[in-house]
Length: 257
Image (tube, rainbow, N blue to C red; front, side, top):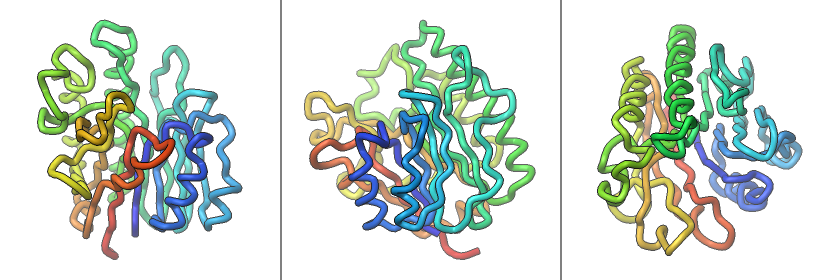
């Protein structure tokens, strides 16, 4: 199974690139984040052989799972999910080819003083509880997407730049550690170029070309799946060219069970 995750930063703006990438990369299962639509363009991806399940409530946020290997037990949101003030379309789960897959778009947090930061931590705590139940029901579980947290200082281009900012605070990193404590393993992808496994680069000031990025897109998998990882890489090529997302996709190849 080839599994991928990608924050597309608007599926409408990125649709031609997404379709081209799907056709060339041929993933079996794709988790998308920040789709920014209430009505997902299912027909276009179905033409490439994908079933689609989406959860979007308007022009912000939004997640989806695309699959060529079956799409069952779809869950939009999760029990106890907090909102800001209402739930925002940030998590969707589905069973694809015997694997329970969750696509998540964790709240940004804005600044540590902003109410959105408290919401982010509450959201992470709530999804941990939901994933504990998911893991009890599914031995093969993977949670992937844009977590808006860099797990360690090695996952940002210059830790000194981020002092006092979100994405790197102890509380956020502790929330990630709490997810891993469920028995989820960080599948760290290899960069296609350079030494840094960054997945996000700001559009401004040539950050991508200078590799001034962050690793905030993550793949967390149960041991049974982590042991099946043959390769995992960051598709930097998808971040290049005209009108890209500010995130690059992660592609993970799993051996047969």
